[in-house]
Image 1: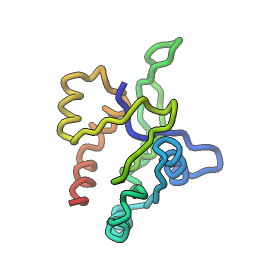
Image 2 (image 1 turned 180 degrees about the vertical axis):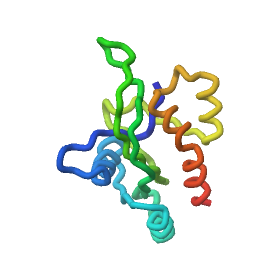
Image 3 (image 1 turned 120 degrees about the vertical axis):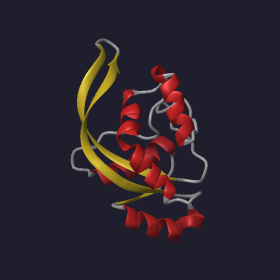
Length: 147
C-alpha cells in the first residue's frame, strides 16, 4: 500500500522532534533540521535554500489523536487510537530508502495524489488518506510558502 514518507514511534525518553530527526535519517538516509513553527521554517528555508539538496527542513504542524485503521496479519483490519505528531518538510536531494522500510518512493503533486486516492482508495493506507483529508488546507498553505 502507498503510505506517508516517514513514520515512527517515539521512544521513551525521546521527544517527537528528536524522533523526526532519527526517522528521517534512518528511513531516507537524509539529515534534517526540525523546526517548531512556520516562522522558524521560513527563516531557515531562506537561510539554507542553497543547501536543500543536503539537508531536509521540517516544520511541526500539529499533535492530535486519530482513530486509524491498521492491518494486522492475524486480526485483519483493526481501528486503533494513535497520538500523531505531524510534521511537513522539504528536501531537494536524492534519497535512499532504507531496506525493509519502503519498497520505493513515488512522487505526486497534491492534486494528482488526491485524484488517485479518489479513484483507487484501496491502494493507500488509512493514515495517509486521513492526514490528507484532515490537513489539506495546511498542506496547501505549507506548499504555498515555498514559492
